[in-house]
Length: 307
Ligand code: DON
Image (cartoon, rainbow, N blue to C red):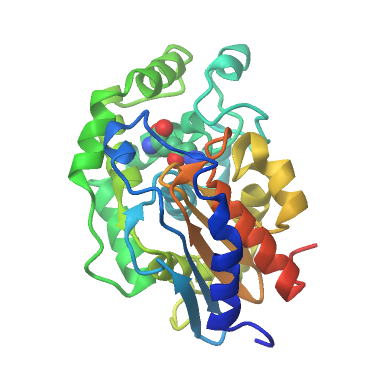
């Protein structure tokens, strides 16, 4: 890949570093509030199998909502498309990721699979099909990243379970509308475990290479999902992956992406590369402040995006 180098990524880290201090580490999950805010990493995995990285790219963090893109991939692999889309929509929400407002107005059908309500429906679907959804997800992640050492962070999962009033309310509201089949607590536990998974930027960039490579993970022989499904997931990431900031992210960065309140963001340029940035301080939409800036610099320096 022309121009792309570890030096370029190091330059991006240096240019973005002054933003640290201008955001806020997530504290509604108390265990996340303990994370050192002064961290910033970036990793890029290209379709020829090269990995480029800089900063704290080897430090593991809580992937949080990044897991929602993988849970959706799993659900679309074990269900007929229509079974999934009869339970959750495909439209941007324009609301905060954990909002309840639209859910009542729209009769318990979440706008998309990436807001909390949508991800909880996906977890509910997985609970019907898989014996232990969290382990199926972990198996997929270890396989895609080639890293068998990836683990759940039980402390983070427990901390979120103790402060789960809002997610419980979302799930019970959907139950009232008959869009949630299993026991709320059981599904919440699986969902929190998925969010708690600890990974670093390098492993995440590798994990999402299938979305940059028409459904086949780079360096693997077997296809994970079809090129059509890969296009579909990328389209949803581009329109809904950064919640009520999806438009601004498309404008500044121009890539399908998925953020998490741990401060990570994955992004892909189909046909070229998968990327992960991480910095724990968030902006008002719950997305990594420095992470978005780093992606914006990368797209501008490389002069590449999906648009
Ligand atoms: O359910 C929650 O609120 C968190 N486990 C995940 C939210 C999240 O990561 C939103 N992303 N920016």
